[in-house]
Structure formats: C-alpha cells, structure tokens
Image (cartoon, rainbow, N blue to C red; front, side, top):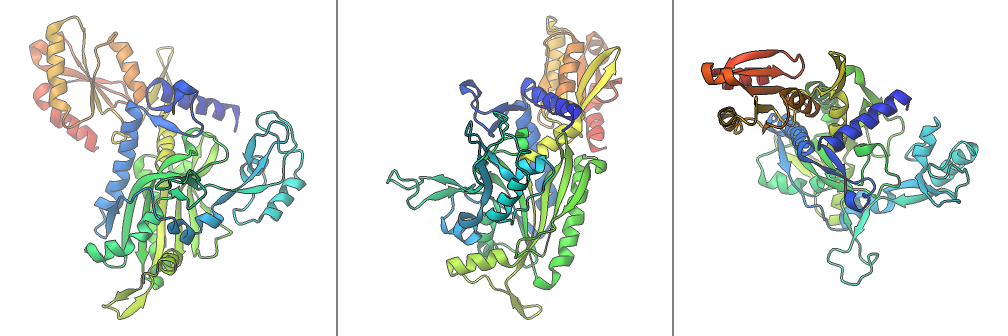
Length: 463
C-alpha cells in the first residue's frame, strides 16, 4: 500500500470515528480487535446498503424469497458442510513475542500466492523458501514456528452445562448460506416456488480470524448478504453467467466506479465447484474481494441429505425429471460494501483556499437525505418555521435539524456526512414562504416555494 493510499485509509477511518459512522467496539475498555460498532450515521448507511440489496435481489425478482435463519444451528450442520474438519487458515507464531499471523496473508504481502487448497507441507515449503522475507508485524523479528491449521469456527456453550466448551460443542455460524440449505425443503414445501428459484438472506456470521486488519474489511463479527439460487443441473452454467452479469450491473447502480471493479477468476477450484469468480473493488489497500459469485454444483444439498437422512430430490413434473438441484450463489459482506461506498464517496476539494471534505454518496445511500436549518437559533420565528419544515419532511426522508453554529459550519458538517440537500429558513422565508436549498455537490443555492418543496425534492431524489 502506497503512502498516499495509506493516508486515504487513515482519513476514512478518522472521518468514520469523528462523524459517527463507525467506532471501535468496547472502546472505553481499550477496544476489541476486529469488531466494530456502527454509529448514528453508520447504521443509516448500513441500512441503505441492505435495503438496496434486498430490493434488487428479492423485491424485483418474482422467483426469489427471503429468509432469516437462526445464528445457532444443529452442530451436524457444520459437520455436513465441512466446516468442522476443513474451515481452517494457516497460522504461525513469532518465537520472540508470540504474535500469531495468518500465513497466506503474510506471503501475499511479499508477492507469494498461497492457494487455499494447499496442504501444510506445501505452505511450510513456501515459508521456508521465503525465510527472512516474512517479518513479525509486532517485534519485526523473523523467527517463526511451523505452520499449523487454525479452525475459524467460534465455539459456544449454548445448552452445554458441563463447563467444558469442547464437549458437544455448538458453533456460532461461520457463514449464512448453511441456514438457507437446511431450509431449502421447508421453503419449497411452504412457498409458491419451483426450481429454478432463489432464497436470499441478510444475517450475522462469525469467524475467529487470526489477524485483524484493514478496518471493517475483515472482522470477526460481520453481516453477509447472500443469494442461493437452486437450478436444474443442465441450466446451471447459463444461469450462472446471467447471475454474473446482474451482479456486475448491481455495483454500477450502487454508485461504484467501473474502473475500480474487476473480475478475479479462481484458477484452483474446490472439488465440487463448476466455476468461481470474485468481483474485486479497488480499496485504498488494493483490489480485494467484494463479492463471490460461484457455481457450486449439487454438493450442498447432497451433503445435508447424507447427514440428515432427508431426501432433497426435486421432481420436475413439467419435464418429467428428478434431480438434486444445483446451486449458484452470490455472497457479499455488508461491511465490505459499506467500506467500498465510503471509499467511493470520500472527496477532498479546495473551496476559497480551504479544503472541503465531502462524502459524495449517491442520494439513495446518503445516511441523511435532508438537513433543515434556521438561519439563526436565537430568533424564535425562524426556529419555529424551520421546525415546521422539518416536521413536514421527516416522514418521507431521513432528516436532521441543525441550529448549532453559523450556516457555513453547518454546511461543512453536512458535507462530511454526505447530506445531499440543506434547507435554510431565513427572514425572507417569513415574507415569501420560500426556502434556500443548497446542493451538496455543486454548492449551488436555489429558492424553492414551501408548497413546491415536496415535489422538488421528490424529483431530485428520483434523478
């Protein structure tokens, strides 16, 4: 990461804390690594991201339905999925200060790619070949233990009263898609769906990440937005290509620059996969995975059928066929999407010799859509009128009432949280029943009659 990119990342993190987007979790106790809290503006941005995804994936698709599966699932779920035996990352420990690092990430930082399917012997060989290049991030020494595999599943004692967490362990889910697979038959039997159809879910997942880094890009508690689409075997790849096309367009519509997006094809597939691509976004620390779009074959339903004894065979009466549906999926993290949106929006401009920081969110992503100001807070007639304007708009838009400081300072505060329009009630308003509306991006100001304000804003937000 270049110095300029590092500075941009620091600026984004600083703004998130200063303006109430994202805080370190449990900060008063020194924080908790790789866990974050979303503040007043962050939770609105997060909600906008999830609402946009849900609208595109579920609401606008007749053959996709929603689900909210429980975080805790029967432990056999994770045996069937392979997580208990195989959901592990390579770990080694500094012999000097005992800091643990994730080996594939350490190799990546020196330009060496470690495939996720490599066994321990292969990874240890790579480490040995590059001995001296991998440096401890804490003490800067170069002596490490041999690589071991560390399982990322987070264990819990839910329902376990033995005080031994390793006896009959229950897990916090490591991914949300398993809740979809185990409910596939329930949805098929109870909802008016037929293959091909999709099940979508937004929910929390937990991974015991070895190293915490890159802000909200990689966290131990996170939310996923996932679509699992159940398809006939002979239509899998055609529908997969259609899904890839749709998912690419989704990010353009979200407001991300096409020049900052690219496809990354997985060269070494897991044994059951037909195809796998990632959509990568150019974060300040480089191009990294934003979303995975995968053709998974019939592995998931076959495994759960084997472990549960439930028959997942689908009978297509129209074509007189019976088969286990194949799955194509699109999976993205809420936090990674929020970080991409923050990165895209962060802008510094020079205005009258001063630097203006402005978050140029698309209008539907902006945490606050409209801010309403009285010109002066010590003039009751202006405050009363401004509050009436606020009351008239708040049911349709997320609004903020601000009367603290001069109007210029209020504009700067709203710029930094990305509010598209600021409305000022001044003394002329009392005479002509019009307000001054200021555009965030152009900083142009226009007078709008109060009886036309609702329609004016509606037109602007539909552009």
